[in-house]
Length: 382
Ligand SMILES: *[C@@H]1O[C@H](CO)[C@@H](O)[C@H](O)[C@H]1NC(C)=O
Ligand SMILES: *[C@@H]1O[C@H](CO)[C@@H](O)[C@H](O)[C@H]1NC(C)=O
Ligand SMILES: *[C@@H]1O[C@H](CO)[C@@H](O)[C@H](O)[C@H]1NC(C)=O
Image 1 (cartoon, protein in one colour):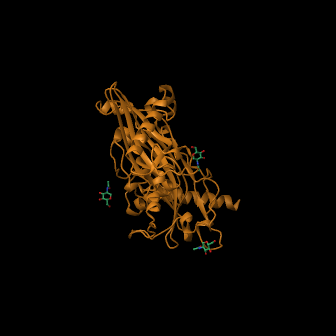
Image 2: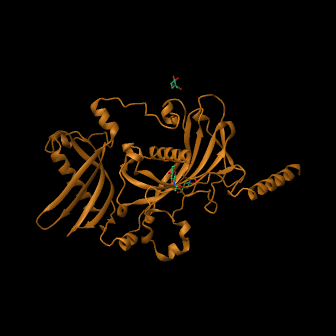
Image 3: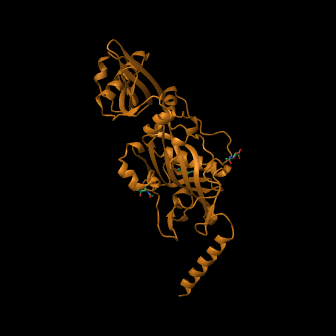
């Protein structure tokens, strides 16, 4: 009984507090933050970088804007942020390990955009920055809308990577690259993106991962030897279009940095330039052999089709707020749940975060969303 009364009292106090300041308060311990605050932007940047590092496939995501952010104090342990980030795909493959700021943007008619929800934990004195959980949902920008606002833009249609025309385009493109390669030869691992376009005749553009091939020239007999090693070393972009008289083939490859450095026998620089944040390492970098990472995946990046391609009755049912479903529900309990983060710290103590239900769309932090890098309305999730 006593506990119940205490709870009621707490709730009343919280409600009372909620009424006085204009800033919305979800739970007494969730603090509204500004989406353009410099520390919020730095943390959002770090969180997205951590999400990118966690991927094995797909493209590096860049931050378009901070859509929403809430902060929760964890006492001596630090702070936990609840981020909703509007993101855009870059042209770098995640295996390049490039920072999104070093990656190129895609043309707006080729954009893939979406939203990530992420928890971000920071303990400044101990130099711990970590994303305990995230989930992202991406879609290609609607082709119908592109055509509507830009009738002259290239009309590209996504094509399945298993389409024989796509495979032919990738093979022809890589053959051209190999013919022009002075020594090394490369072979195809897989196509990562493919679309068709119209250029007087149908053309195919492809992006594909390659590995080093054991042969040194395209006619080398050792080419039949399959190299057991299939580590992707570069992302290539190419295209193939044919007229009755001529074939047009293009090929460019962007080699991943670690590979270039390994090939040149250099050691990668460990230190970075000065930043506003303390120099921090995620748990995986601190000591590869010591802290065991949690076995459960921290999150995933989900790809959905073009919104305009969905059946009308389906989208009506779902409503606009369901267009980018991003779930990040570690708990539905308003009191929260605990999350063990001991592995982030060197000492033997058990360290646990209190995680609350992810703030819903109904409540938004004051001064959110923040300014966008790309203000094209086609790339804002509704
Ligand atoms: C990293 O792991 C090695 C081997 O387990 C251990 O000897 C070393 O002390 C660890 N270093 C740090 C900084 O924890
Ligand atoms: C992330 O999204 C997937 C569905 O896409 C869902 O099954 C999973 O529970 C989500 N993760 C969290 C922590 O909510
Ligand atoms: C965001 O912050 C920067 C620097 O603090 C400022 O120059 C800019 O005007 C702000 N933008 C908005 C939309 O508030």
